[in-house]
Each structure stands twice: as C-alpha cells, then as structure tokens.
Amino acid sequence: MKVPAEIIVNDDLQTLLVQELHDTCCGSKSDAGSSFIPALRQAANVAALPGIVKASLAMPDVHSGYGFCIGNVAAFDMEDPNAVISPGGVGFDINCGVRLIRTNLTEKDVDEKVREQLAEAMFRNIPVGVGVDGGIPCTNDDLDKLLKTGIDWAIDKGYAWEEDKIHCEENGKMETADPSCVSKRAKKRGLKQLGTLGAGNHYAEIQVVEEIYHSVAANVMGIGTIGQVCIMIHTGSRGLGHQVATDALTEMEKAMATDHIDLNDRQLSCTRINSREGQAYLAAMSAAANFAWVNRSCITFLARKAFSEVFQREPEELDMHLIYDVCHNIAKVEQHVVDGELKTLLVHRKGSTRAFPPQHPNLPDDYKSIGQPVLIGGTMGTCSYVLVGTDRGMAETFGSTCHGAGRALSRNQSRKKLDHTQVLNKLKEKGIAIRVASPKLVTEEAPESYKDVCEVIETCQDAGISQKVVKLRPIAVIKG
Image (tube, rainbow, N blue to C red; front, side, top):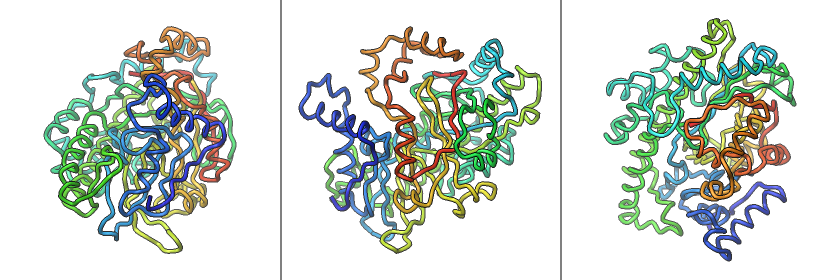
C-alpha cells in the first residue's frame, strides 16, 4: 500500500464490513453472496495504485463492487507521470446520479387519490424497466451533440429550463468530453434510451419534507416547509455508459501489459492518466456523463409534464424548479490541498458524492453561502436526505460524502430471502403509491437489502464531512 485505507463507519456498520470479510474468507459460497472480493480488501488494493495521494477513502455506505468498492474515493496526482485512471473507480453506470425538483404543493394537495393519479401519470410518461426505448426522439447527430454539450442540448431542444444548468454539478457538462472516443456500439445502445429510467436501484419518487435540520439552508433551496412535495430522480447513463466502461476495460488490459503495471486485482484495470488510453477513456467517460445529465433532464421534462397533466397547471405555476443534480459515479479533475500543498488531482468517486463547502468557487452564487446541496436517496420506501458540504469534508475526504444507504445483502441474497408480494404490501401499508415494471425484482431493492440510511447519514454528520438539511419521506415510487 502506498497510502492508508481509511473507512468511515460506526460500530454497527463496521460489524457488517467485518462480517462480509469473514463470510468471504471463512464462510460458504452462499454466505459470501457476492462475486466480488470484500470491500475492506478492495479499499486496501486501491491504496496500492500508482499515483494515489493521501488515502483510499470509503464512505459509511461502503460495500463491495467491481474493482473499487462502492463508496470509494481516491485521488491521483495529475503531475505524477505514473498516476492512473481506472474505470473500476467510476463504475459501469457512469454519472449515475440524483436530482431533486421542488414544488409549491404540500401533502394536503396530494391525498391518496391524487398520489395514485400522479404515480400513474409519471409511470405513463417516463419509460421504465430493462430494454425499453425512450420517449425522447434522438438522431445520430443529436447524440453526438448532446455527448459534447450535455445539458445545453436539452435546453436548446426545450427539455430543460435555462436555470436548470447552474444547479447541476459541472453545470451539466464535462468540458473534457469527446464523442469521437465513444464507440459505435455504445452510441447504438444509448440512441434509443434517452429519457429512460432503467431498472435496478433507479427510480423516480414523489416525496414530502418530513424534518428540517438546517432552516437557513432549506430556505435558500426553497424547501423550507414541512410537508412540501418534491420529486427525486435517480438514474445514469444507461447502456451507453456501461458500454464505455466495457470498451475501456478491454483497452486497459492491453495497456497494462505494455506499461508493466502490476495489480492485486484485475478488476482494477487502469492506465496512466496521460497515456493515449487514459485520455481516450477520460474523454469517453465525460461524454457518457453528459448523456446522463441529459437523460435526467429529459426525465425531469416528463415529470413536469405528468404533474401538469394531473393538476392542470403549468410546471412554472407549480414552482417545479431544480434544486440540484449530483453525480456519484465519476472521475473529475479538481484542486485540493494535500500535505499543505495545492495539487491538481483526478478524483475518482464511485458510489460517493461530491460535497463542496460554502464559498467554493465551483458552486452557483445562490448556494455559496450554505455549501453544495448533496442529495442522498434512501432505499425503496425509506427516507432520503438533503445535506450540504463542509470545510472539514473538503480537507479530509476531497470534498466527498456518502451516496445512499449501501447494500447489506447482495441482489442474489435478496431474491432468495425476500418475497416481492410482501415487499409491495408493506409499501402500500405505508400509504405509498407504487408503479413497478418488474414486480419480482423489487426484492433486490427492498429496505431489508440495504443498510439503514439514517445510520449512514448520522455517521457522515458525526464525522463532520457533511451536514443534514432536510429529511424526505416517499409517498409514491416509480421503478423499473
């Protein structure tokens, strides 16, 4: 290891990590439940990569994944000629992320009948599930343009509001994107998927503000009323991003052999940042990130349309403004202080969220006084949170915090242990309207499959790397 591996957990979350390690090393194959090596070993392996600085960090929602563990944050010195970039440090769903849209509605405006109408309207308007085509027309020329310009394409086409741009991380566009670095196969996969939610842990939820912890920040964001209705959207770059990652891994296998890069785990396939392969992946990954921002923008357009249909009012009248859009599977060039020296780093965040502090130059003017909004989705039927970044997080975790609850059971374990009808019935008992394209898959996303998101959030709060602003409770769930 070139740097330490540091894991931010409390006692209960630590027990889950140690149990995973025990089950993998000492238990049966069914106990392990995952094809990946344990998260603790993954974090340690990342700490041995060339060019890494400070530490291999893991957030409280940490669990095993492909290459890097989910929840991993690792930064590499751009001035170190041996420093690497790794698709395993970004993930297959490039720029999987979350956005939150507010409304001027309250829970009193959405009784049981209305929330069922809203759930049905959103399910009808937003394509969900595996293999479905999008409802947003997109030509090959359109695709190349949006891969390059990100949310600007959506604004030009009328799928996003001009103001949405400033409330997206990176203003909804990675400047390092180059569509020519995206393969034909990746483009083919993405062409028909614009404006689609997908499946797995992706969702669109109608939520209400349940608790307010930081009234100043909540009011700045326009969500300072208990019972206020919001919409949370969680999805990414779909098949296009997956193919970009797959293509890059193939190329990097060859590059590692040429450059004599030895690894503890082949899933950490990487290449030097400034190599031809490294720059090509950075450009393709950035293009896939732009696709994801456009995808979430198009889904927002469809959600605004659904609300407009139900309430017979324009989205502007309903105050359906974008609060913020964050990504939690990405690698970006940023400046951070390491050992007292300002350095330019390539920060990999896989299953972790950027959380910049107040007055950071990359924040929009209206949020500079409070810090970056951080959107943390809970599990299906449980609460979600809005946080803000802190100075301590900037100093200790490269301005990063958690991204969700984090899995406690593998998908395979969830399918074996849980019954989908019971999961759906529990949601209905809570008064949650639900529309699901594949009911039998909901066991994979049941609350029992995940850690307690409240415990994860409190751990981040106690560590000082982010601050709670608002807690949100779901009243309708739309899933693939």
